[in-house]
Length: 65
Image 1 (tube, helix red, strand yellow):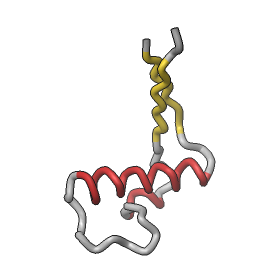
Image 2 (cartoon, rainbow, N blue to C red; image 1 turned 60 degrees about the vertical axis):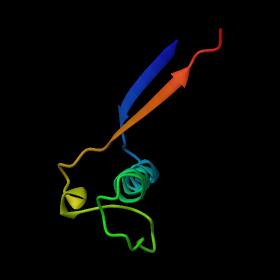
Image 3 (cartoon, rainbow, N blue to C red; image 1 turned 180 degrees about the horizontal axis):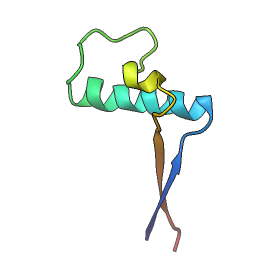
Image 4 (cartoon, rainbow, N blue to C red; image 1 turned 120 degrees about the vertical axis):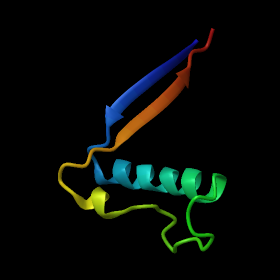
């Protein structure tokens, strides 16, 4: 059985990890972003710097049977 755990990214490392995953999905896998990979391999926009922006961290854990 799979367990889904969702939380808010509150630490800077969690937010950076979120931005790296977003680049991987939208830039590399889906090709929605520029084909030139940025030097930091993160996707961010003006909304990411707002104090009202929240990033979610979702983890899927498989239980051993």
